[in-house]
Image (tube, rainbow, N blue to C red; front, side):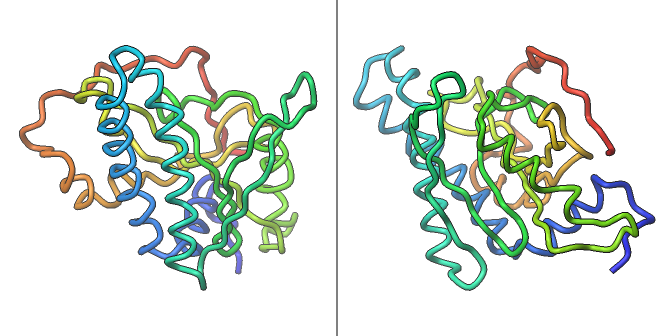
Length: 224
């Protein structure tokens, strides 16, 4: 299969859409909305504000990753999940675990960030995944190889929502090998599956959109 006529970012987006079944993409978005809502309801019921605000992030993260394991169990022929340890970059000690989805030749992790252009905080596992993926997919002759595509499922809190109970975006992006920026525009699940967004947000009559927030560090989008 030759894809030389397209920029790298479009190749990656096309590969993601062909490797990840539509029903899995929809489950990733639907689950995101549900987990935001569940985390908000739990934390703001159990804790006082602003303790609830502080607690909702880690609780939501755990809900999302647990839901990912459930997605793999619902679609066992298409999706596999693994729990993997991550280490503190300074001490080298294992400080936690993360969930990775394997969907065909796609490897996926998730991160909560401020905007769809923001980079997640530094993590060895993300840098390793990015370094080993992407360009290994295509040789110099532009033909696909046996490599894998690494994507990060980016989402962020809608700060205008009630008790932080919904996301503001949901987008899969493909980092460069140094994890210093993204290649192409990625795959915007929010716009791709507007019907799911409409189940949780009255788009036409919703005037509580968050004010745009600039990322702390400008991120250069690359075409590789």
